[in-house]
Picture (cartoon, rainbow, N blue to C red):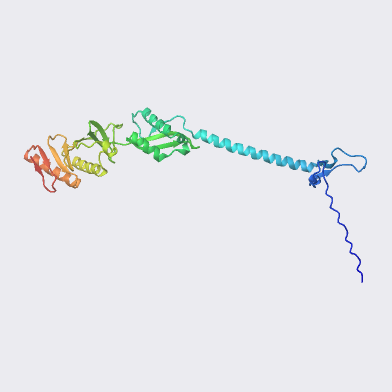
Length: 307
C-alpha cells in the first residue's frame, strides 16, 4: 500500500509595516491621534508613512502636563528662596550685647570683641541655628570669668537679636599674687566688679595663684565656710568682719573685726557657726575684763586662747 506524499503548506513570513527609514516601529499605534493620508493609489501625501495629527484632546492633555512641570519648578524655586532667606536672616552680621542686670557700667566693647573673636574661630556659628551655646558659653567664660550667664535673644524667625550677659556678684575681695580678685558664692575668681559694693577683704598669703587652679582661688566648701561664719559673727553685734587672712598654715583662717586691733584664728575643719559662737562669747568676756589681746585662738571647740 502506497502512502501519498505529505504536502505541507509553506508559511509565509508575517509582513511588518515599516516607516520611511525602514524602522518597523514607524506605524506603532498611538492613542488620541488621527491617521492622515489619501485613498487614491496615485496621490500620496508628504511623509505619508508618519503623517499623524494631534487631536484637540491630546493638545489639552500635553498643556496640562507642561503646566504641572512649570508649577513643580516654581515650587522648588520658592523653597530654595525661602531657605536662602532664612540663612540670610539668621546670619549674625553685627554683634549686639545687653546685660541682664540693670544699672551696670560695664564696657560693652570688650565683650563685643570677645564674641567676634569666637565667631572668627567658628565662622559657621554666625548662623543662629548653628550656634553651639555650650561651647560658646565655656569659651567666653574662660576669657571673661566674671560672666555668670550667657543667653541669646532671638527674633521670631530665629535670627540673633542680642547676646545677653549676666555678671557674677562678688561677696569677697581677694588679694593674691599682687592682684585683686573678686569672688562670688561659687568660689570663682574674676577681676571686674560692676556692682561697686563693700566686700570683705581676703588677703591670701598661702602663695597659691588662681591660675594654678583653673581660675578658682577657693573651693565651694571654703567659700561656704567663710560666708556662714562671717554672717554669724556680723549678726553677733560685736563688730563687722572687715578682713580675712589666709596664712601659709594649713586650714587656718584669720579674721579681723571692725574696731578691734587683734586677730581671731579659726580652723576650716570646725563648724563655722560653732566657731562664730565661740568668737562672740570670747569677745564679750575680753570686753568685760577690759583685755586687749594680740590675738584670739578659737580653733579648739569649746575653748579660747588669747595672748
